[in-house]
Length: 161
Image 1: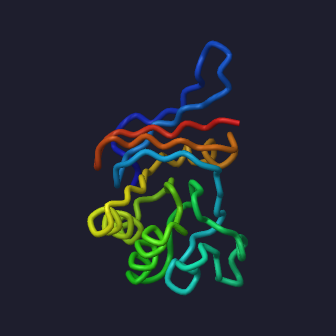
Image 2: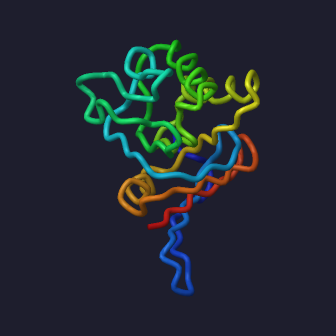
């Protein structure tokens, strides 16, 4: 399901090459980091190592890639509810993503970041963008900043080179 409000991407004026995409926050927080686009959904349970931060799923296009400290952009996750515990543990270990941008709402990912916030006091913003803006997020900018001041409210994703 897509966010219920206007999420058009806006180009900043005055020579700034940044692009701002409006999103819906599922988990609040602020993060900035290098973008890692996962073209296919990832299962954190069995497909990701919470100790090292590496993608372990051998058939995944990003096999061997580290997600530690990055802003992960992916359509959605896959797999069982156990993925949320692996994601929460990776966040606790400092080997998880700094923020996550999704095209589709994903309850399992949301539970993982919310649990990390509640149990460990670690904030990882999770946002959803509209289908039409997902391509922009995937293909523009090398660095992403997520500003999600409230859960279940408007957020911004700023793409910079």
